[in-house]
Length: 113
Length: 114
Image 1 (tube, rainbow over the protein chains, first blue to last red):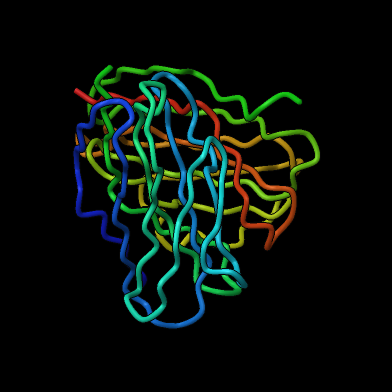
Image 2 (cartoon, one colour):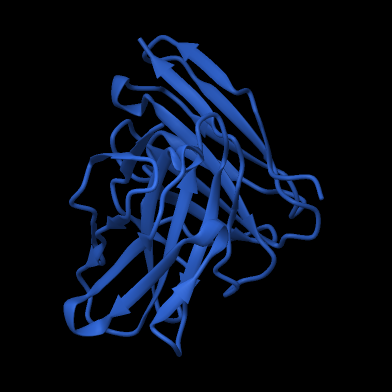
């Protein structure tokens, strides 16, 4: 069964610092990849997704993620974080042709003004 | 566009009691999901409906959990009897069609079993 690892449980950064959150999945076949974000007091919402094509995908609010198939990774990046990026970030994977999402355990991001 | 609605937002019950959660998906969304999110973990899919039919319930503990979506719109998830380990946030999500992959989540119901 598919599994997803997010190695950073809690990340604390100052505003304007660069961000990279790691995500690795276990199954080596064709997959669809997602990052979801949950801001304090809000619903889970989709940040960005990768289905095929350019492995560097751009999402909302200046976030991007790079799919590296050889490393089974889909890391999330942002060049300069803002206090408003404080949230919990979840990586999720779906095997191709299967809608079932497998989520990682999440990374709590705290941005210090 | 109204989002996914869930109620109640919070529920506290004693073990061995029963509880039910309600979800109303975004209008026109045919696919509905129930997830369980235990503290410190990511959401785990319990059951997926396509209209009023079950697509995947492989991770639903069927001895105590049940779910229905009778008219292909709103859905109810029930736990009977509850155990301490059922304490979690129960999330409902919907998507426009099977295979769309983009799921829209509700606010969740936080269940505490004492």
